[in-house]
Image 1 (tube, rainbow, N blue to C red):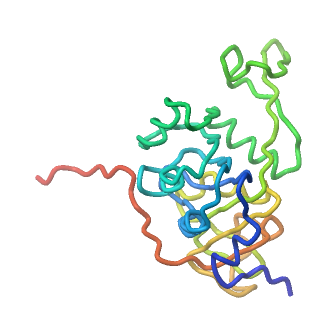
Image 2: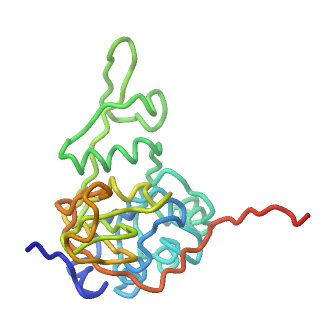
Length: 233
């Protein structure tokens, strides 16, 4: 029986080193691999390149790695609510590669599927296309974008089993599924880890072949980036 379960986050992140390229799922603070991020902070890896839609907020999510100056380069689509991210980018302390959001998702999916590159119309005629190959299809110009190459991908799912099969819940089904299998090693942390056979195959979003290590996370804060409520009547 295939068993990809590891006992804890420390075992799950074995082999992570300074200078690596890391993918991290999530959108804002939704569906981020909180346990993996905390362990990266503890390991104090440096000079890492992070591929993620954004960098969380100043004191949560990838913002914790920015606080410790652990990130050399951010590949993302949104600076967002993180003042430290913005400060480091404008001061030149942090290298930032801003990528259209759809292109970011597709660069992950292409890596997952084994495609080396793809053509997209997004970014043609802008700085995004500088230095890249362009080509015309049916009278429309496209930019050739390479798939990502990453050492580790860290994703967060709702449920998973020991074989690595994953189910995502709600909006956390954002960049997480595309990042599974898009790196040399994919590490999945889940809120509930069950035995093989307990998940309905019809509900599985990502099959275990895309996952190398899986563990049950703990102490999820699930912070809300911006809370918007109605005034009490």
